Amino acid sequence: MGAAGVLRAALWGLLFPLISAQEGLLHAFSNDNPLLKKDYCIMYNSFWTSLPSSLSNATPTRLVIFTPKMLCSSSDVPHHIAKDKAIVVKRGNCTFLEKAWIAQNLDAKILLIASETGLTTPGGDKSTYKNLSIPIVVMSYVDVFDISKSLGNNVNVTLYSPPSREFDFSMVIIFLIAVLTVAVGGFWSGMEELEELKAAASSENPGVSRKNSETILFGPVKIIIFVVFSCIMLVLMYYFYIWLVYVIIAIFCLGSATSLYCCLAVLIQKIPFGRCRLACCNTTFEVRLIFLAGFCVAVAAVWVVFRNENSWAWILQDILGIAFCLNFIKVLKIPNFKLCVLLLGLLLVYDVFFVFITPYLTKSGESIMVEVAAGPFKNSEKNYGNLVEASAERSAPHEKLPVVMRVPRFQFCTPKICGMQFSLLGFGDIILPGVLVAYCHRFDVQTSSSSVYYISCCIGYAVGMLLTFVVLSLMKMPQPALLWLVPCILITSALVAWKRKEMKKFWEGNSYQVMDPADCATTEENSTLSSERCGGE
Image (cartoon, rainbow, N blue to C red; front, top):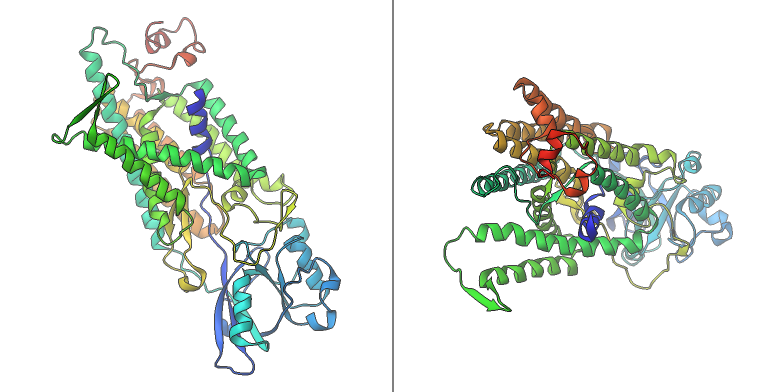
């Protein structure tokens, strides 16, 4: 595949499921002055802890703050003080579950863990927490300090989690981004195919297309290598997240800046004026394209610097992500439906395996895919053998992988308390179905089918996205989107080909499409169709 192809595969081979957060509220009020009250954001694991849906149904509990104690030993907290109390201890030195068992043995009613490393959902070995009954929540260390400062030492707290609506408007935006990106990317690929056909028709050898230097042709060997590489990369991310996340960020920055340039350059070149050129080293450059390159690099650089600014950085990430997906859908070419089925089928198995099967294989009982998507510190206070160091200042949130579209959720009842919550969709859930949409449009161009395959496949993708959102709302758990997208687009495309009595041609592809030389060696030597696709070699 080459170094560039491996790096690209490393980035978008990570197909993340749609995931949702588990936020709640801590309502604190002073026993000395009932008028003094305040709400704080908490994170909890809904599989461990069930919180009331409203404040009126919650039971007040006396709060006792033991920070900077970490409760890694029962001697850290006196039993007579912790009994029937909501106790606050500091995050670090041992796992959430170890703290929870000690707190439960001390007869505490609620365990609150004060974190300086950002709010994360408590997690751990499922077989261990089954017998735990004490609620476990994570809150900010700064908020714990604020409770003491604002409300005093005689404080009661109640925990509750307001119900969220089944439908959120952010899903509409995610849907539009995904469908429009796939549709535009597929249309772009088809138009490029039309230009190549015209160029081939006017050349001396019209039977064979000119392979674009920017095109990545996938054959059976490359598909298998790609899927295997994606599996290896995901497992490596699971074990070495804190180092590899910066590699992925760097690759995304470079790839998205290049993709944004490719997308905008196509539009700028349609403008008939301002074509001033600059000569350098026996080569001429359009000045406006030089400025465009600088602009694209600047956009990517701004995102890198401010990527953790939740209030607006998501807009830049989505713009760069859309350009990234568009460019890959246009560049990545599968020569026939047969290889599309192979690629999407293998990645469907990959997606389902790492979301639904790996919980039975990991020690923590959590999905590898969800673990990587959630980032570090999700399941434990320990990180690759190193304890989380406590600092005097509030630390920045951990790095997140940028291979997702992020749209703020609108439905959470107290966004100012818990900050922005996001709906996510992985790039792979756009790029990979987009590859089939692009093939359908190229096939339409090659066979003069009036875009029937292209439009049908786009509709199939839209139906698959709607089905994904419905299942996500009903099941309320992480979903591998390809589980619903792949059958919708494959079945739709196959039905159109069968109805038009073109299945054989659609399955094998048009002889105009030239295969990559590396894959020609794997085809049957006596196949006439293979000979045509390999340029008669």
